[in-house]
Image 1 (cartoon, rainbow, N blue to C red):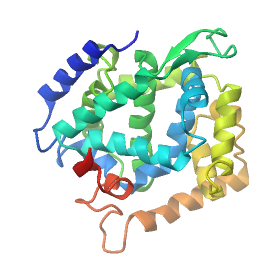
Image 2 (tube, rainbow, N blue to C red):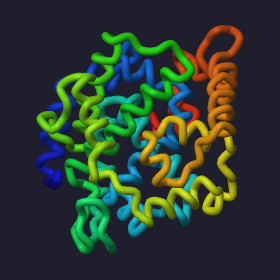
Image 3 (cartoon, helix red, strand yellow):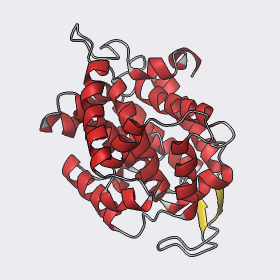
Image 4 (cartoon, rainbow, N blue to C red):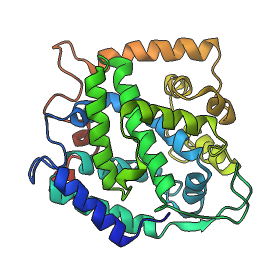
Length: 295
């Protein structure tokens, strides 16, 4: 099912109705989603989220065929996080404007799969504004943020996870995802992500492997991804996808990932006890310091 312009506007009405306020935006500083996403720790999971998205053949094909990821990979990284963080931390007007810009960009990303990939036949159409693909991309971002947060910071309590997911459902409205398509609570959300991983929908295509290989080798950025980050990404991935992407995870990688988790605590938690981003300086300010003023 494709998200139409009318569908998006109805979803934006849902978001506005549940928003914390015009200035506070969708959530505001007291929200669970701010508590998680303001931390620099979430960038530890960026590789995991990317590979989970690439494992969906439609996403991999769209990036391979339509995206500027190879021409300007660092710029794409910046724009992706700028849009997401504007939705989370921006004012209500900034968040909804970012949602409309993203929809218009997605509307241009359509095509056909070049080869068979999992349950999808060669020549089958894909669209970036298709609900099930949007739902998966949203899920990878929401789940990975919590996973990365809990990796180096005190884990969220059950009540916080439920609040976080309720807020994540509201964020999904900015992607045009109908509320009825989303899991009702954190437990069922976890069941959905597990079912996706265990299904044949997630199939690491040649395009996905090529994109991942180019990014993690540094061939497209000129910046080789450190071993500790590749090892940590491998650790955070489901085992079958780790193998499909060709990420080694032997004893050396396990030790590297373990050391990285411990070392990152010192980086993310300064000696004064504050978090790396600070309670009033969310991670989006580091990635896009002008997001609130220019969105």
